[in-house]
Amino acid sequence: MHASRRESADGSADGSGDGSGGGSARGSAGGSDALVIGGGIIGLVTAWRAAARGLRTVLADPAPGGGAAQVAAGMLAPVTELHYGEEALLGLGLASAARYPDFAAELAEASGIDIGYRACGTLSVALDADDRLHLRELHALQRRCGLESEWLTGRECRRLEPLLAPGVRGGLRVDGDHQVDPRRLAAALLAACERAGVIIHRARAERLLVTADRAAGALLDDGTRVRAHQVVLAAGSLSGRLAGVPPQAAVPVRPVKGQVLRLTVPPAYAPFLSRTVRAVVRGSHVYLVPRENGELVVGATSEELGWDTTVTAGGVYELLRDAHELVPGITELPLTETRAGLRPGSPDNAPLLGPTELPGLHLATGHYRNGVLLTPLTGDALADLLTTGELPAVARPFSPRRFSAAPQESYA
Ligand code: GLY
Image (tube, rainbow, N blue to C red; front, side, top):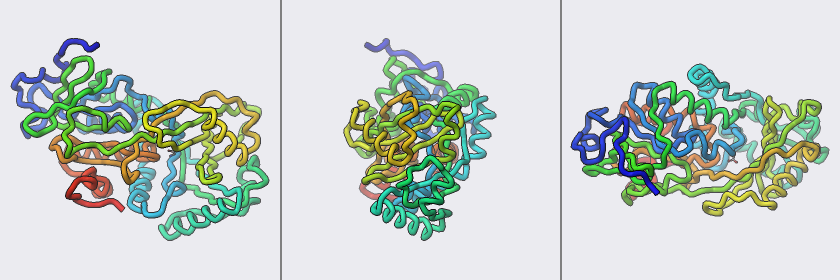
C-alpha cells in the first residue's frame, strides 16, 4: 500500500507549474539538478561525484548501499578477465583500475571509511591440458594487447602460493590486477553521499516522470514525486523495470545470477593465500579472493535464470569442488556465508553509460562482471555528462545508443 502523494522536500509536486523538467536551465525552481535512481555502488558513485561538482542531487533507493556489491568479490581484474573482441572494454577497465589508488584515498577522506583497496596481484592457474591451452591463449591475447602478464610453471606458481594443489600445471602472474572490499566500498560511498549533501529517499522509483518529451523526475513508491532536470537510471539489473520509460529509451539489461561463498581464514592458518587465485575448471570460472581481515571470498557461478537468487546445493558444491581442486586446504576453513546476486548484463556484456534517446534520461548500468572495477570511471564519466552535457572520450563507445535503430558509435 502506498502513502498518499507527497511533495518531495527538494522538489515540487507534479503539476505545480514550476517548469522543471521541460526547461533547459539547470536547477530550475523547486527541482533538483540530478535524480539518481538506484543506490548500489554505481548509483552512489554517480550521486557523490555529481554533488561534489555542485549539483543538487537526489538519490532514490529503498535500501541504499545494497545491491550486487553486497555479493561481489571485488576483483579489479581487467587483464585476467580479458576476452576476445573486448579491447574497448579493456581500455575502460584499465582506465578505471588506474584511478583506484587515488579514488580509494579520496573516498576514505570523504567518508572516513577505508575501502580495503589491496594491490596484491592475481595468479590465474591451469589444472589440466585444456585449462593450460585456454590460459596460453589468454596470455597470447594479453601480450598482443601490450599487457603485463608472466607465464609461470606449476612449480613457480606453488612457490608464490604454497597451498596450491600439486596438480597445478602452470599459470599467469598478473601483478596489476588487484582487489577492493565491495561492502566497504558501498558503505563508504553512502557516507560520502550523505556528507556531500545528496538527498537520499529510501523508497523505490516506480515510474519515470516525462514532461514535454523530456525526463523530469520520478514517482516513488511512498508517493513522493521527485522533480529533476536530469535523471540517471543506475538500478543495476532492475534498470529495465522502471515504468514510464518510452520504448525508444528501453534499457536492455538482464539479470545474470552469481552464487558466491565466504569463508574465514583463522589466524593460525594465515597467510592462506597472498593474492587472488583463479582458474577456469572444466569451463567454469572459479576465484579465491583473500582479504587482509581473514575473509576468503570464493566465486562465482554464472547463471541465466532470470530473477532467481536461490543459493543452491549444486552451486555451492561446484564452487567448493573447483576451489578444492585448486587449494585443497580450503575444506578446513569455516564456511561463513553463501549468497547469490544478480549482475546486470547488457546484450554485449559491456556497460551502458550516457544519454538515451529520451532527453534528460541517462543510463549508468549494464556493468555485468565489472561493476566494482568500473565504479571510479563511471562516477567521473556521469558527473562530466551531468555538468557539461558530454561524456569523456573513453566512455563514448559505451553509449546506450549503440543499441538504438541508428547507433551513434559502436562498441568493439
Ligand atoms: N567479476 C567477477 C564476477 O562477476 O563473477
